[in-house]
Length: 95
Image (cartoon, rainbow, N blue to C red):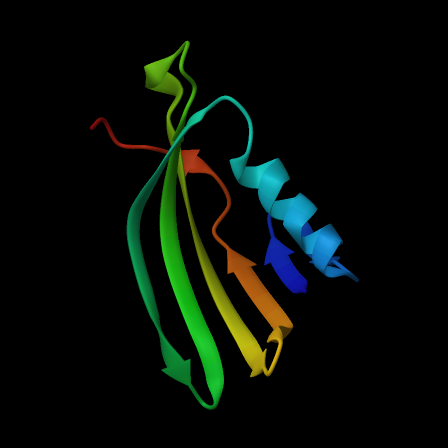
């Protein structure tokens, strides 16, 4: 998986490395909510877009949102090459 996130690009060489990235971003004790998503195909690639809201249980005023876009090659066994673009965490509007 290749990605462009603030503060810069990264490469995850294995599926385990990619999974660790997602756990780092979205795991932990904060409340997680999917705000919006879209799936489809574009130019022969799988396309995914989702917007996430994370909120610390101890401080709801510190909620944050991020949006990610993924283009991936589909294979017989799952996903092949994965390219990810992330907005980075932004303060969430009050809900």
